[in-house]
Image 1 (cartoon, rainbow, N blue to C red):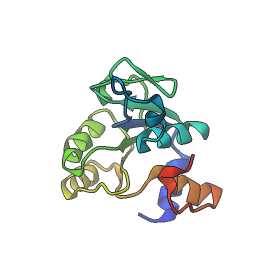
Image 2 (image 1 turned 90 degrees about the horizontal axis):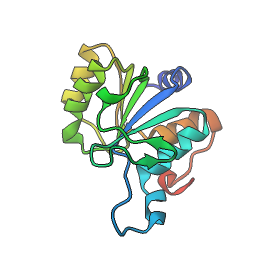
Image 3 (image 1 turned 30 degrees about the horizontal axis):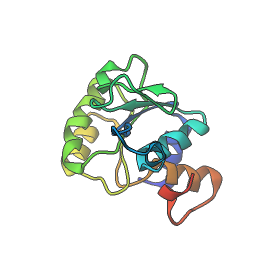
Image 4 (image 1 turned 120 degrees about the horizontal axis):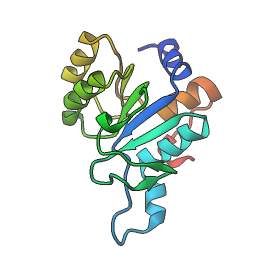
Length: 155
């Protein structure tokens, strides 16, 4: 996928369903939560005006970065532009099917995540597919013209 295509996706999207945002574990230092990659990316994208809906069946009902966590994509009542996945690659074909079912426009697999079957499912359904790219890094590169070496560590 070219930079122009990614720029187009980011420019024309408003709502991101982020699958795999972490909740606070019992007894865990709340500061740890702020350092988790999905949570950093969620907060960053919110800062640029995106509505980011956290999806995590193990944290349903909790609040992360001001948004209520939902248990699945199907529980989201508004139009989803991007389904952004922070889960192991092997789980992505199921998320691809779910993304299609809820009418998402793009399936985005974060840095380090890719799967041929998820790609085929997405392409067959004519939804955009991005893999092995960090949505935050791409936004920074394309809209802020910055390219941090360790994007996950920067806020």
